[in-house]
Image (cartoon, rainbow, N blue to C red; front, side, top):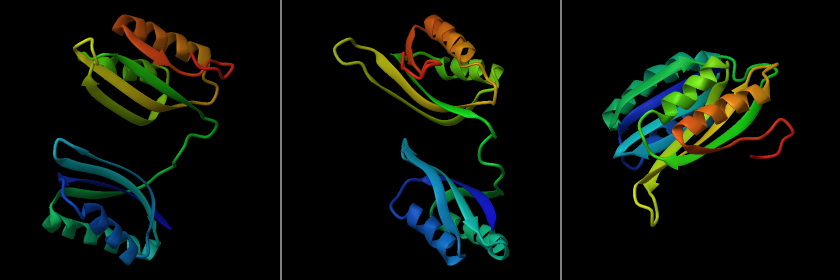
Length: 177
């Protein structure tokens, strides 16, 4: 079986997911995992599929027909290893006043410690009664084998203090902060 990662972007409209899933099914593939969203009228998605080796090339070619259905770009790449061996997963939640650079600062600290961001969701909303805009983020992180959770926590808490945001992540004992 071939593992393919499909990415798609285009003007949002009904039927885009159906068009992609029809092609996957027509080529004997299985839709394994996906993340999709509508942002400012645009559809963006990433999908992990498996397909019999002998059908992979035909599926990749068939995906180009989706441009006629409104997707601006559809791309397929051979997938690789899904998770790091011995990695520890943890969830990070962050809330604070919105300002430029929050994602850059947090992701920079994580990268410097060899921590991978497996999933990241962010949003902004008007702050109730206080005025201004609130930034919220939730990330699923993968710490490499042997990573020191207390070191990761301390580094994230230091940057959270600088950014003046609230941060929640598990402690080494497994409780939340």
